[in-house]
Image 1 (cartoon, rainbow, N blue to C red):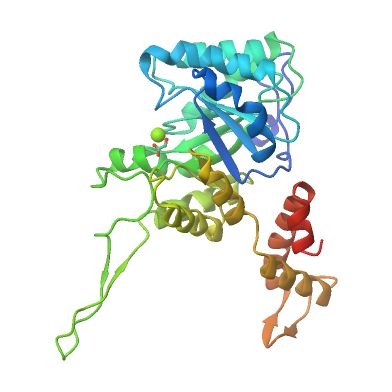
Image 2: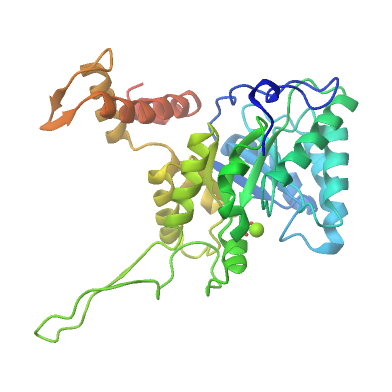
Length: 348
Ligand code: GLV
Ligand code: MG
C-alpha cells in the first residue's frame, strides 16, 4: 500500500526537502561500479569521472566482510575529495537485513549527503523496503539540513521482488528506477546457472526434425527477457527508469554487448559497468544509433504536429511512430549535450 494521492508528495520528515515531482533529466548509460576500500581505485576517480555518466561506490556484494567499514569510509572520502560535475554519484549500500546497512546509510548521508544523488538498495523484496529507506532518508536529510532529495534505486534480484515489481516502482516519489540483478535473482529462483547475466548454451529452442535426418538447428534464447520486460513495464508505468545490471564475463565483450543491447531495445536506459572495458560497450549500446536518429528526425520533420500519416522510404508513419521517433530523438539530444562527436554524427 502506498500513501494516498494527497499525501504522496509530502516530505516524510519535518524539515526534509519535498520529493521531486518529476525525475531530473540525466544521461545514465553506465553505472560504473568501484570498490571504495581500495586506495588505488579511489586514486583513479578523477580520471574516471569524465568518462562515465554515473560513478557508484559499492559497499555490498564483492566487498569482503572485513572491509565493509573501510569501503564506507573510502566512499565518504572520495565523495568529499572530488568534484563530480555532470557525473552522478551513487552508492550501493548493504542489504537492509545486514549488520552494515544502517551505518552505511546514516554515516554517508550525514557526512556527504549533499554530494550523493542516489542510494542503490539491493535485495528489495517489496514496497516495505522502499518505505523504510524513504523515511530514514527523510529523517537524515532533515537532521543534516540537506536541500535536495536523495533518490532510491532498487535492485530487482529476488523472486519475491519480481513478483512485487509494480508496488516497488510505485512505492515512493523518491524512486529513481531499478536494475535487474541476474546473479542474485538466479540464486533466488533456483535457476541452474553460475553465470552473471547473459545467455546459457542449454537454454533454447530446437528446430523440428527434418525428413532428411540432418542435424537440427538449436537457437539460444534470452534467459532475461521476461524479467526485463516486466521491469520495464513497471518502471514506465510509474515514470521511473529501468536498467540492466551486471555482466560478469569480462572475457566476452560480444556477449556483454548483446545482453546490453537486448535491454536497450526493450526500453532500458543503461547497464552496470563492472570493468573499465564495459564503459565503452555501454556508451556504444545506450547511445542511439546514428542512422536510427537521422531517420527519427525525418519522421518528426515530416509530421510537425505529430498527427496524420505519411510515407518515408516506403514505410508508413503516423502518430504512434512519431512518438517512437521522439523517444529516440529525445535520448539523442541528451547524448549530444554531453558528447560532441555523437552530436555531429546525429546532425544535432
Ligand atoms: C547483482 O547484484 C546481481 O546479483 O546480479
Ligand atoms: Mg546482487
